[in-house]
Image (cartoon, rainbow, N blue to C red; front, side, top):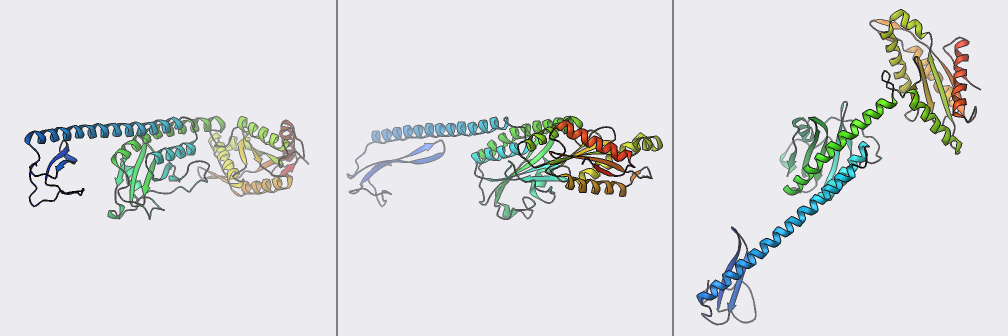
Length: 400
């Protein structure tokens, strides 16, 4: 508009009065970014040509603003993609499950400042992991009746901009202060590996661009987790006995070697238990080899329950087992062995309606009391076991 201002203020202040003005909108397609104003303290100061010049300048300013916005958006996009790229590269550095999850959470927080909990799918439910790296194992929980559980079952991400509209909790516990949440199931090859719950105490905390980037990173996370699971399973099969799930002999010998080195550096003693099922051939001959397998599984289960979490049980041979008791002297090892012997004697093996009573004999040696040599420790425990079997079986004998 040009000409005399009649009954209108200029809309801004400057020294002197404004008697005439040209105002041209700075348009970005249908959106008005601002207004370019040229004014004068004289009346009727502008002609039609002036209006065209101001419109031309307004158009040029609109173009410059548009270019700047495109540039800024492009730079932001490149920066965000760089974050995703770096986070994805870090995921390739480890095959440890909890380390991967910790790196994933760090990458997500570089995209958006969100609280993050990952629920790793395991037998019986989901195990929550909050920090991922060297954290104590949380108990497995159920996601039933939660938004996280719904997302996992539907295999579909869900963004809740305001949780106050939902009576259903976001996750099993610790979600009272959540006002908005992004829930992403991690899927790979049609398998749900876990669920990411990303949350904020603020409503509408996640923008659409951030959701896109987080989903992109989550795809990389799912592939990395699948690789870690495969690696873990291959390693488990390589070091464990297929029937009992205990360590195999080769890996157990490596553990003994490591413990002997630790004791040699001034560490506390350890004890070795060699365990043999008494008259095991008679079980196979009387009830059949499947019954023998059932007996082996039962014995291995009782061994696992009797020992501490830090100890290492193994299947050492056909009907022979072994246990490495960390930081345990001869007296402590004897008490553990006696507890194990009594537990196996009390628990008969039930197979196809038959109750099969079994007993075990145990030989014990201790490092460095009996020897500092790995081979001698094994040999002396074996000789103690031989003595237990020759002198009546169903007993515990220490080398000393």
